[in-house]
Image 1 (cartoon, rainbow, N blue to C red):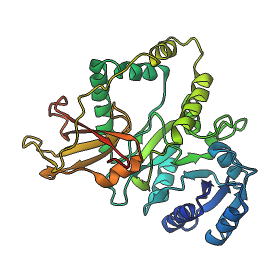
Image 2: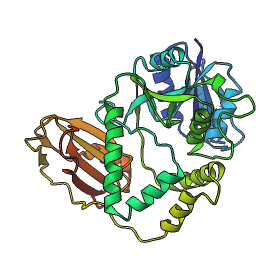
Image 3: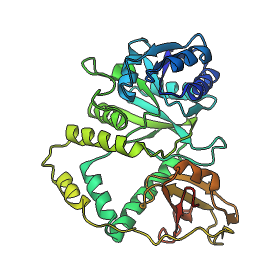
Length: 360
């Protein structure tokens, strides 16, 4: 069955070449289209030299953004399954076939994603994607100001995370990340583009998930499909995410939505850290003896520690995750350490804070 992998390049020829090689190593007969948004003759020439001859290269008319770049790529393939792959993603063996098999097996699925890890050793798992709603936005704003709400939100998310982490079969999701997502092309309405061109970058994948769900289709993470996604919390992302968020909420929620109105009214009010964060001990932490099923360490750019990358372990001592902290660039990092057993007291958590940067 024909699959086309779509990648969008912006001054990252060497990185995107590695991504392409991982795609071909995983499934040799996958078609690949690379759209170059760099608007740079030298970058275009580098792509010509580095990419395998079988790869279709498309030069965009300037930096048109991620979503429009993917839309442009679709004009150069008739594949019934489209695999979006970020330049910083590396597929692990069997990934493409596992995703394709899930879509062929369950015709109610509109799109699927692999289980994603931050590191090549596959110790640190990336979180499930969340579907932004006006109600959730309001709850998040409240949690940043009311510790009791933060605890309730955390416990609800704990249950969802455990279900996600422990899944062995495709597990339904509210949304998927466009960083690694395979889409059934027939699920895209003929009168619509895959991505709404109003988004420059970020939230275009959430918009697509919302549209697929409204068509009655499901989304799933496929545990048998695995990929490494070397995500980094880069400074330029905040403004782009804010812009994408504005387009998304303007499109799907009326301006007088009661939850959205409450959220916006609360947004400028003072907030405080919902938990008592402290520095991680320099010599690590001994695992509490009653944590018989091991521990979970979560790291996040948010003081709610959600969304977060997470690692599970059973070692008797837990040490500072120095290598993973580098992925957060120069931003603060918030961490939570707790038991891996759902039967243990969920309130028994340890919260940590790091200032990542030159003064670290």
